[in-house]
Length: 257
Image 1 (cartoon, one colour):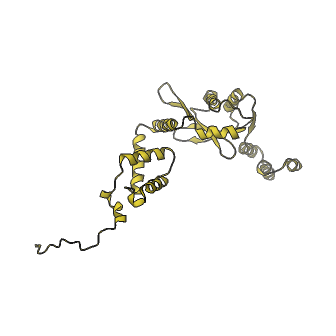
Image 2 (cartoon, helix red, strand yellow; image 1 turned 90 degrees about the vertical axis):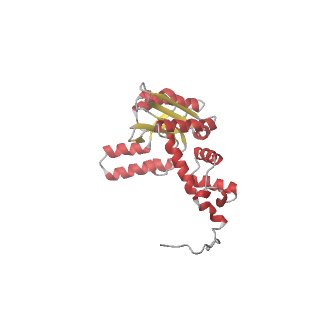
Image 3 (cartoon, rainbow, N blue to C red; image 1 turned 135 degrees about the horizontal axis):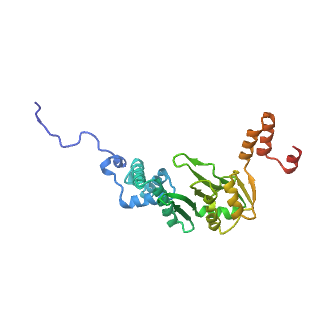
């Protein structure tokens, strides 16, 4: 049995310094204003580290932010999970339409199947539209990207330096799926490219010919080389052909080569 014989009311250890108080859990909280600000910045693509830095800067230092980077990460994670409870399609549509509210020029369109499932999805943001007006003379379509979970082609409309002009999530690679090129043309104020680089898909070729009437069509270098590898067994010729495709030649150098 223990007996208390003496009580010392003074602290016998030093109190935590003020600059470390924010590390104690019951001294940390995210206000509604904090959450609204975090939601806005995260929706516009800022990573958590940048968001934390901005909020700490506004508060005068990390110790005055009211919460830690870990608290911020946990909030964003919980918020993300709460938004995808009804499925990733709803989360995607909500995300795109929320961005469209802040970007007046952004275009988001989708269609549904008879059983109310996502069929097609198309989106173009402000930056893509701006870039296209300057760099849209040459256009490349890549529908080879595919997610295994849903088995649907993701059409990326790009230029050689990965300047993305738009995205289309397609139900399949049939001609009717590429009718979304009409949406792309409308979004880009009916400016048509002079040259279109594609992957050789017949449905894509048919739709491009219908929408971009005066554009010249060419296969991309990767598909040309893939076809060569499939049909040519001479390894030395393959390497020379690859050099012709990818090496930087002037016109005269290429003709001589």
